[in-house]
Image (cartoon, rainbow, N blue to C red):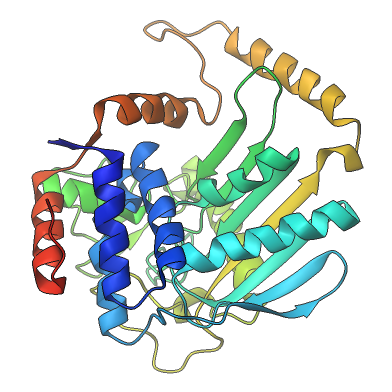
Amino acid sequence: MNFTHHQLEKFTIAVLQKIGCPEEDAKTAAAVLLSADLRGVDSHGVARLSGYVRLWEAGRINPTPNVQVVHETPSTAVVDGDAGLGLVVAPYAMKVAIEKAKIAGTGWVSVKNSNHYGIAGVHAMQALQHDMIGISLTNASPLVSPTFSKERLLGTNPISVAIPAKEQPPFVLDMATTTAANGKLEILQRKKGQAPAGWIQDKDGKSTTDPLGVKDGGALLPLGGDREHGSQKGYGLGAVVDIFSAVLSGANYGPWVPPFVAFLEPHPNPVGEGLGHFFGAMRVDAFRPADEFKDHMDNWIGRFREATPIDGHEKVLIPGDPERELEAERRAKGIPLLTAVVDDLRALGDKLGVDWE
Protein backbone atom coordinates (compact mmCIF):
# COMPACT_ATOMS: atom_id res chain seq x y z
CA MET A 1 0.00 0.00 0.00
CA ASN A 2 1.16 3.53 -0.82
CA PHE A 3 1.20 6.62 1.39
CA THR A 4 1.91 10.23 0.53
CA HIS A 5 5.15 11.85 1.57
CA HIS A 6 3.10 14.46 3.46
CA GLN A 7 1.17 11.86 5.48
CA LEU A 8 4.30 9.98 6.56
CA GLU A 9 6.17 13.19 7.34
CA LYS A 10 3.31 14.52 9.47
CA PHE A 11 3.08 11.25 11.40
CA THR A 12 6.85 11.09 11.93
CA ILE A 13 7.02 14.67 13.22
CA ALA A 14 4.18 13.98 15.65
CA VAL A 15 5.86 10.83 16.99
CA LEU A 16 9.18 12.60 17.48
CA GLN A 17 7.49 15.48 19.29
CA LYS A 18 5.80 12.93 21.58
CA ILE A 19 9.20 11.72 22.75
CA GLY A 20 10.24 15.30 23.51
CA CYS A 21 11.93 16.58 20.35
CA PRO A 22 11.46 20.30 19.69
CA GLU A 23 9.39 21.00 16.58
CA GLU A 24 12.32 22.12 14.42
CA ASP A 25 14.41 19.08 15.37
CA ALA A 26 11.45 16.81 14.68
CA LYS A 27 11.05 18.38 11.23
CA THR A 28 14.75 17.98 10.51
CA ALA A 29 14.75 14.34 11.59
CA ALA A 30 11.57 13.55 9.66
CA ALA A 31 13.02 15.09 6.50
CA VAL A 32 16.09 12.84 6.76
CA LEU A 33 13.99 9.72 7.35
CA LEU A 34 11.58 10.48 4.52
CA SER A 35 14.44 11.22 2.13
CA ALA A 36 15.37 7.54 2.49
CA ASP A 37 11.85 6.37 1.63
CA LEU A 38 11.63 8.76 -1.31
CA ARG A 39 14.98 7.59 -2.69
CA GLY A 40 14.03 3.93 -2.37
CA VAL A 41 16.28 3.14 0.60
CA ASP A 42 13.31 1.66 2.46
CA SER A 43 15.51 0.04 5.10
CA HIS A 44 16.47 3.47 6.48
CA GLY A 45 13.17 5.34 6.31
CA VAL A 46 10.05 5.34 8.48
CA ALA A 47 10.55 1.60 9.02
CA ARG A 48 13.28 2.67 11.47
CA LEU A 49 11.06 5.07 13.45
CA SER A 50 10.12 2.60 16.16
CA GLY A 51 13.82 1.81 16.58
CA TYR A 52 14.59 5.42 17.49
CA VAL A 53 11.68 5.42 19.95
CA ARG A 54 13.02 2.18 21.47
CA LEU A 55 16.43 3.81 22.03
CA TRP A 56 14.72 6.82 23.63
CA GLU A 57 12.77 4.50 25.95
CA ALA A 58 16.08 2.89 26.93
CA GLY A 59 17.50 6.30 27.84
CA ARG A 60 20.01 6.22 24.98
CA ILE A 61 18.65 9.19 22.99
CA ASN A 62 18.47 12.73 24.34
CA PRO A 63 15.52 14.42 22.58
CA THR A 64 16.76 17.92 23.49
CA PRO A 65 20.52 17.78 22.90
CA ASN A 66 22.95 20.69 23.12
CA VAL A 67 24.81 19.90 19.89
CA GLN A 68 28.01 21.94 19.76
CA VAL A 69 31.53 22.28 18.39
CA VAL A 70 33.97 21.27 21.14
CA HIS A 71 37.24 21.63 19.23
CA GLU A 72 38.13 23.38 15.98
CA THR A 73 40.70 24.86 13.62
CA PRO A 74 39.92 27.03 10.57
CA SER A 75 39.16 23.96 8.46
CA THR A 76 38.31 21.21 11.00
CA ALA A 77 36.01 20.61 13.94
CA VAL A 78 34.83 18.00 16.40
CA VAL A 79 31.11 18.08 17.19
CA ASP A 80 29.59 16.61 20.36
CA GLY A 81 26.07 15.39 19.61
CA ASP A 82 25.06 15.20 23.31
CA ALA A 83 23.40 11.79 22.67
CA GLY A 84 20.91 13.40 20.28
CA LEU A 85 19.22 11.81 17.32
CA GLY A 86 21.81 11.31 14.60
CA LEU A 87 19.09 12.54 12.25
CA VAL A 88 19.53 15.96 13.91
CA VAL A 89 23.22 15.87 14.81
CA ALA A 90 24.41 14.99 11.30
CA PRO A 91 22.76 17.94 9.47
CA TYR A 92 24.24 20.29 12.09
CA ALA A 93 27.74 18.84 11.62
CA MET A 94 27.52 18.93 7.83
CA LYS A 95 26.57 22.63 8.02
CA VAL A 96 29.69 23.22 10.12
CA ALA A 97 31.79 21.51 7.42
CA ILE A 98 30.19 23.66 4.72
CA GLU A 99 30.78 26.88 6.66
CA LYS A 100 34.43 25.88 7.18
CA ALA A 101 34.78 25.20 3.46
CA LYS A 102 33.37 28.61 2.56
CA ILE A 103 36.30 30.18 4.41
CA ALA A 104 39.13 27.67 4.09
CA GLY A 105 38.26 25.89 0.84
CA THR A 106 37.59 22.61 2.60
CA GLY A 107 35.86 21.68 5.85
CA TRP A 108 36.20 18.45 7.84
CA VAL A 109 34.10 17.49 10.84
CA SER A 110 34.31 14.39 13.02
CA VAL A 111 31.39 13.70 15.39
CA LYS A 112 31.11 11.89 18.72
CA ASN A 113 28.24 11.15 21.10
CA SER A 114 25.65 10.71 18.36
CA ASN A 115 23.24 7.99 17.21
CA HIS A 116 22.15 6.37 13.93
CA TYR A 117 21.95 9.14 11.31
CA GLY A 118 19.77 7.60 8.58
CA ILE A 119 21.07 7.36 5.01
CA ALA A 120 24.54 8.73 4.35
CA GLY A 121 23.66 10.28 1.00
CA VAL A 122 21.24 12.92 2.25
CA HIS A 123 23.97 14.50 4.39
CA ALA A 124 26.58 14.53 1.62
CA MET A 125 24.02 16.11 -0.72
CA GLN A 126 23.75 19.21 1.52
CA ALA A 127 26.99 20.43 -0.09
CA LEU A 128 25.64 20.38 -3.66
CA GLN A 129 23.70 23.63 -3.46
CA HIS A 130 26.92 25.41 -2.49
CA ASP A 131 28.90 24.12 -5.49
CA MET A 132 30.77 21.84 -3.13
CA ILE A 133 31.59 18.15 -3.04
CA GLY A 134 30.08 16.51 0.04
CA ILE A 135 31.39 13.47 1.92
CA SER A 136 29.49 11.57 4.61
CA LEU A 137 30.66 8.57 6.66
CA THR A 138 29.41 6.87 9.82
CA ASN A 139 30.21 3.84 11.92
CA ALA A 140 27.37 1.54 12.93
CA SER A 141 26.21 -1.47 14.95
CA PRO A 142 28.98 -4.11 15.22
CA LEU A 143 27.50 -6.76 12.94
CA VAL A 144 30.37 -7.31 10.50
CA SER A 145 33.26 -9.77 10.72
CA PRO A 146 36.65 -8.76 9.35
CA THR A 147 38.04 -11.08 6.67
CA PHE A 148 39.01 -14.49 8.20
CA SER A 149 37.20 -13.74 11.50
CA LYS A 150 34.06 -15.05 13.22
CA GLU A 151 33.87 -12.04 15.57
CA ARG A 152 31.61 -9.05 14.87
CA LEU A 153 33.90 -6.04 15.09
CA LEU A 154 32.71 -3.49 12.50
CA GLY A 155 29.49 -1.93 11.28
CA THR A 156 28.14 -1.62 7.75
CA ASN A 157 29.97 1.75 7.84
CA PRO A 158 28.64 3.52 4.72
CA ILE A 159 30.40 5.99 2.46
CA SER A 160 28.64 8.71 0.48
CA VAL A 161 30.14 11.24 -1.92
CA ALA A 162 27.98 13.84 -3.71
CA ILE A 163 29.46 15.78 -6.64
CA PRO A 164 27.70 18.65 -8.46
CA ALA A 165 27.25 18.89 -12.22
CA LYS A 166 25.66 21.55 -14.44
CA GLU A 167 23.02 20.17 -16.83
CA GLN A 168 23.35 16.57 -15.68
CA PRO A 169 21.97 15.51 -12.27
CA PRO A 170 24.62 15.23 -9.54
CA PHE A 171 26.79 12.17 -9.04
CA VAL A 172 25.74 10.65 -5.68
CA LEU A 173 27.51 7.56 -4.41
CA ASP A 174 25.87 6.05 -1.31
CA MET A 175 27.12 2.59 -0.38
CA ALA A 176 27.68 0.31 2.59
CA THR A 177 31.14 -1.18 2.97
CA THR A 178 29.47 -4.58 3.40
CA THR A 179 28.03 -6.76 0.66
CA ALA A 180 24.60 -5.66 1.91
CA ALA A 181 23.34 -3.36 4.65
CA ASN A 182 21.61 -4.87 7.69
CA GLY A 183 18.43 -3.08 6.70
CA LYS A 184 18.26 -5.28 3.60
CA LEU A 185 18.15 -8.30 5.90
CA GLU A 186 15.34 -6.71 7.91
CA ILE A 187 13.34 -6.31 4.69
CA LEU A 188 13.97 -9.97 3.78
CA GLN A 189 12.87 -11.01 7.27
CA ARG A 190 9.59 -9.12 6.82
CA LYS A 191 9.11 -10.71 3.40
CA LYS A 192 10.21 -14.13 4.72
CA GLY A 193 12.78 -14.35 1.94
CA GLN A 194 16.28 -15.79 1.70
CA ALA A 195 19.51 -13.79 1.53
CA PRO A 196 21.78 -14.18 -1.50
CA ALA A 197 24.97 -16.17 -0.95
CA GLY A 198 27.84 -13.96 0.13
CA TRP A 199 25.84 -11.62 2.35
CA ILE A 200 26.12 -13.47 5.68
CA GLN A 201 28.13 -16.05 7.54
CA ASP A 202 26.77 -18.13 10.42
CA LYS A 203 28.24 -18.28 13.92
CA ASP A 204 30.81 -20.84 12.73
CA GLY A 205 31.97 -18.62 9.86
CA LYS A 206 30.21 -20.61 7.13
CA SER A 207 28.13 -19.05 4.37
CA THR A 208 24.37 -18.97 5.00
CA THR A 209 21.31 -17.60 3.22
CA ASP A 210 19.18 -17.43 6.38
CA PRO A 211 18.26 -13.74 6.89
CA LEU A 212 18.17 -14.45 10.65
CA GLY A 213 21.77 -15.67 10.54
CA VAL A 214 23.15 -12.48 12.10
CA LYS A 215 20.60 -12.56 14.94
CA ASP A 216 21.60 -16.18 15.56
CA GLY A 217 25.24 -15.25 16.21
CA GLY A 218 26.52 -14.93 12.66
CA ALA A 219 27.78 -11.81 10.91
CA LEU A 220 27.41 -9.65 7.86
CA LEU A 221 30.33 -9.92 5.43
CA PRO A 222 32.53 -7.07 4.17
CA LEU A 223 32.12 -5.88 0.59
CA GLY A 224 33.29 -8.73 -1.63
CA GLY A 225 31.86 -11.47 0.59
CA ASP A 226 35.00 -13.60 0.95
CA ARG A 227 38.76 -13.31 0.44
CA GLU A 228 38.58 -14.73 -3.09
CA HIS A 229 36.17 -11.96 -4.13
CA GLY A 230 37.99 -9.11 -2.43
CA SER A 231 36.45 -8.94 1.07
CA GLN A 232 39.72 -7.55 2.40
CA LYS A 233 38.94 -4.39 0.39
CA GLY A 234 35.52 -4.01 2.00
CA TYR A 235 37.10 -4.70 5.39
CA GLY A 236 39.69 -1.99 4.74
CA LEU A 237 37.07 0.55 3.68
CA GLY A 238 34.91 -0.19 6.73
CA ALA A 239 37.95 0.18 8.97
CA VAL A 240 38.80 3.60 7.50
CA VAL A 241 35.22 4.79 8.10
CA ASP A 242 35.39 3.57 11.71
CA ILE A 243 38.69 5.36 12.35
CA PHE A 244 37.65 8.65 10.72
CA SER A 245 34.26 8.63 12.45
CA ALA A 246 35.26 7.54 15.93
CA VAL A 247 38.95 7.17 16.71
CA LEU A 248 39.38 10.71 15.36
CA SER A 249 36.45 12.21 17.28
CA GLY A 250 36.39 10.31 20.56
CA ALA A 251 33.31 8.20 19.79
CA ASN A 252 33.10 4.44 20.30
CA TYR A 253 34.66 2.28 17.61
CA GLY A 254 34.78 -1.37 16.55
CA PRO A 255 32.87 -3.71 18.88
CA TRP A 256 32.23 -0.88 21.35
CA VAL A 257 29.88 1.03 18.99
CA PRO A 258 26.44 1.27 20.66
CA PRO A 259 24.09 -0.82 18.49
CA PHE A 260 20.89 0.32 16.84
CA VAL A 261 19.59 -3.24 16.44
CA ALA A 262 17.36 -4.52 19.24
CA PHE A 263 19.08 -7.90 19.61
CA LEU A 264 22.39 -6.40 20.82
CA GLU A 265 23.07 -4.54 24.05
CA PRO A 266 25.61 -1.70 24.37
CA HIS A 267 29.09 -2.81 25.38
CA PRO A 268 29.46 -2.61 29.19
CA ASN A 269 32.88 -0.92 28.95
CA PRO A 270 32.71 1.81 26.27
CA VAL A 271 35.92 3.35 24.94
CA GLY A 272 34.34 6.62 23.80
CA GLU A 273 31.13 8.63 23.66
CA GLY A 274 28.21 7.38 21.58
CA LEU A 275 28.41 6.68 17.87
CA GLY A 276 30.61 8.61 15.42
CA HIS A 277 30.31 10.30 12.00
CA PHE A 278 32.66 12.09 9.64
CA PHE A 279 31.78 14.82 7.13
CA GLY A 280 33.66 16.70 4.48
CA ALA A 281 32.85 19.65 2.22
CA MET A 282 35.16 20.79 -0.57
CA ARG A 283 34.59 23.99 -2.51
CA VAL A 284 34.98 23.14 -6.20
CA ASP A 285 36.46 26.57 -6.89
CA ALA A 286 39.23 25.81 -4.42
CA PHE A 287 40.55 23.59 -7.22
CA ARG A 288 39.28 25.09 -10.50
CA PRO A 289 36.46 27.43 -11.58
CA ALA A 290 33.14 25.85 -10.59
CA ASP A 291 31.49 26.30 -14.01
CA GLU A 292 34.48 24.76 -15.73
CA PHE A 293 34.43 21.79 -13.36
CA LYS A 294 30.69 21.27 -13.77
CA ASP A 295 31.00 21.39 -17.57
CA HIS A 296 33.52 18.59 -17.34
CA MET A 297 31.36 16.65 -14.89
CA ASP A 298 28.56 16.86 -17.46
CA ASN A 299 30.98 15.51 -20.04
CA TRP A 300 32.14 12.73 -17.67
CA ILE A 301 28.58 11.69 -16.84
CA GLY A 302 27.46 11.91 -20.44
CA ARG A 303 30.28 9.70 -21.67
CA PHE A 304 29.61 7.03 -19.05
CA ARG A 305 25.91 7.07 -19.93
CA GLU A 306 26.92 6.32 -23.51
CA ALA A 307 28.90 3.23 -22.50
CA THR A 308 27.83 0.20 -24.51
CA PRO A 309 25.56 -1.91 -22.28
CA ILE A 310 25.88 -5.67 -22.03
CA ASP A 311 23.07 -7.80 -23.44
CA GLY A 312 19.86 -7.56 -21.46
CA HIS A 313 20.55 -4.10 -20.02
CA GLU A 314 19.11 -0.90 -21.46
CA LYS A 315 21.75 1.54 -20.24
CA VAL A 316 24.67 2.19 -17.92
CA LEU A 317 23.67 4.05 -14.75
CA ILE A 318 25.50 6.78 -12.86
CA PRO A 319 25.59 6.60 -9.04
CA GLY A 320 22.44 8.39 -7.86
CA ASP A 321 20.33 7.56 -10.94
CA PRO A 322 18.14 4.81 -9.41
CA GLU A 323 17.41 6.89 -6.29
CA ARG A 324 16.64 10.03 -8.30
CA GLU A 325 14.23 8.16 -10.58
CA LEU A 326 12.50 6.51 -7.63
CA GLU A 327 12.13 9.83 -5.84
CA ALA A 328 10.33 11.35 -8.83
CA GLU A 329 8.03 8.33 -9.02
CA ARG A 330 7.29 8.22 -5.29
CA ARG A 331 6.57 11.92 -5.02
CA ALA A 332 3.97 11.42 -7.74
CA LYS A 333 2.51 8.04 -6.77
CA GLY A 334 3.26 7.75 -3.06
CA ILE A 335 5.66 5.69 -0.96
CA PRO A 336 4.98 1.95 -0.74
CA LEU A 337 5.22 0.38 2.71
CA LEU A 338 5.15 -3.31 3.57
CA THR A 339 2.18 -4.44 5.67
CA ALA A 340 4.54 -5.33 8.52
CA VAL A 341 5.89 -1.76 8.54
CA VAL A 342 2.39 -0.24 8.49
CA ASP A 343 1.33 -2.47 11.40
CA ASP A 344 4.44 -1.43 13.33
CA LEU A 345 3.75 2.27 12.74
CA ARG A 346 0.11 1.92 13.72
CA ALA A 347 1.14 0.21 16.96
CA LEU A 348 3.70 2.94 17.60
CA GLY A 349 1.05 5.60 17.05
CA ASP A 350 -1.36 3.85 19.41
CA LYS A 351 1.32 3.64 22.10
CA LEU A 352 2.24 7.31 21.86
CA GLY A 353 -1.23 8.69 21.17
CA VAL A 354 -0.55 9.71 17.56
CA ASP A 355 -3.32 9.08 15.01
CA TRP A 356 -1.91 7.09 12.10
CA GLU A 357 -4.64 8.42 9.81
